[in-house]
Each structure stands twice: as C-alpha cells, then as structure tokens.
Length: 114
Image (tube, rainbow, N blue to C red; front, side):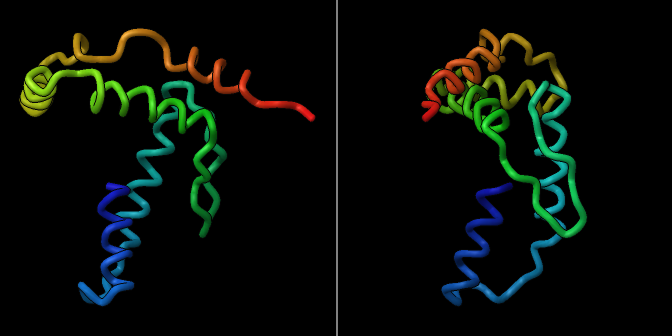
C-alpha cells in the first residue's frame, strides 16, 4: 500500500494523473503499521493530524519479514504461500525462522555512542 501511495503522489506531482485524495489510503496504512505493536514492535501512540513515525523497531520487523519473502523464499514457495493465504489455509510453515528481535539487538549494537 505504501508503494501505491508514493507512486500516486509522484505521478500527481508530475501531472501524469489527476489530483486525488489519498487520505483514506494513508489512514489504512497507518492503522496497519500500528497493528504491528501486537508483535512487540515499538510505535509511538497515534496523534490526531500526525503520521506514525517509523521507529528502528518497526524498520527491523519489516525488514525481517520483507527480506525473507523477497530474497529467501523461492518463487515456487512464494506462489504456494500466496495461494494458501488467499484460500485461508495455514501459512505458518512459510514464516521466517528465528526472531526479528534478534536483529533489533544487533542493530542497536551498531549504534556508536559519542
């Protein structure tokens, strides 16, 4: 969804498509980002008229799952996953192995304190 919003904004700024209101899409994306708190992601509390700021915690969580599906899961398995997901079947076996929080710990250890 974020790619769709960015692409629309880019195309509107270039005059490729007419101006459209993306407020509903932006709220839907914000809602989905906030739902990651169920998985332990640290996100600031939503405020009226303000966007949720992507924290290092969210970025690591997103990268953990996104990289697995884009770079690790073979195309055939990815297709099988999407089909199972559409049909409401159990998709647990396709989930990345390990804990995304381990990457957060590594990410925090890279921070240099002056």
